[in-house]
Image 1 (cartoon, rainbow, N blue to C red):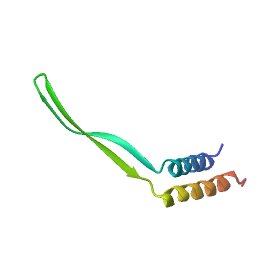
Image 2: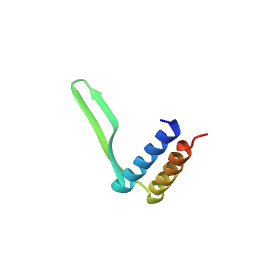
Image 3: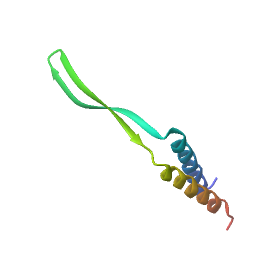
Length: 73
């Protein structure tokens, strides 16, 4: 399989996943203090909104790469 087709399929999958989820959440450990046996950590929850245009763009670009990668020279 052509590398352009593989990249195109990955972009299509990522675009569909982006449209289905809408946002991504993750937890980030920002500060950590260790004093002897005592440990203090601060964890922040982050939420990133995925724009609709980015998902649609990934699907379109992925489709173009699949078509271009499938052509025989």
